[in-house]
Amino acid sequence: MRPTKQSRRAAAIAVTSILALAACGGNDKPATVDGVTSLRVNTSIPTITIAGALAMDAQDIDAAHGLDVQFDMAGASSTLSIEAVLSRDADLALAGPPSILAAMREGAPLTILGSTANNLQVLVIRQDVIDRLGITPDAPIEKRMEALRGLTIGTNPSGSTYQTLLRNELGRYGLNPDNDVKLIGIQDSNALVTGLAQGQFDAVATSSGVVEQAIINSGAVVWISGPRGDIEATADVPVLAMVGRTDWVNENAEVVDKFRDAMGESLDSLEADRDTLGPILKEKYFPSTDQGVWDLAWAESAGGYPDEPTFPRSSYDFWVDNDPKGVAAYEDANYEDVTYAPAKG
Image (spheres, rainbow, N blue to C red):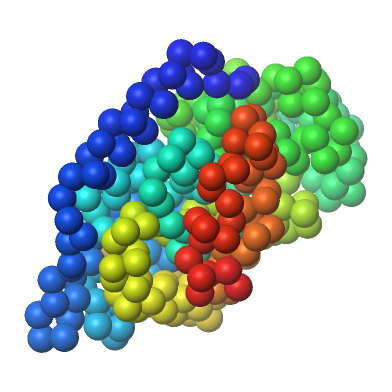
């Protein structure tokens, strides 16, 4: 399940191309009109994972901090969001820490500004598989993890944030993710849902907001929940972080601070205003989502966001320790250098 030689070569070529683009041009200052500064932030299409950004946009929290944030929500690839920052198509981005750190490892001049979502991964199992296992979803976590032995689990692609997280969690409970389970990485979340319903997978592990469709469609049952804190060691592991080009961040620290403050307020609203905010986000960003699916996803994700947008050393250490290239590959991308000072917590 490790990246192939060809994929690593392709990644290196991509980073080289990005760095060449990043070398062009000056430190562009964002436009400020009547005290309001425009800011371009690249992120994925609307998902539960980017709820912090959605809460900011829906409630005009950016305006209260003197910002006019334009969220470019397109695609579902952290790599593309990082490319947008390095090529100056965006000022900042929201992306998965593994992708950010992998780019830094290859020399990309990036700075992490803090995290905006913690472990939102949820693993669901088909009911007939549960019946065969002979234990219940409320069994001790050790028994639930051991019960995964020999199962086929659909998840995100190899090297992705969520598959890396799953592999770590399996290892914590004595399962070898390459030998004791069969992990099938798939980019298309719809294929994960339909694959579970069709019996191609015994279980599916991916972000809250996706698995709930499997619960509605096929009666799948939540087995392990990241946002619920089932595995204490990974409950606060960040799956989404703010990132910017280092030169841009250094040149625009005041704007960065305003954005971090706005994101902090947005994260607060996800906890304090869930009853009123949920329907607002549903109507504006998820109008075609089945109401039952939305209600499940909104409830399931409740504990999946940090109290403040920081990126402590423990977060850096987790993702670096779980990089197949190993800690030694980060000699030139150490925590103190790649993390924005106010985000260190």
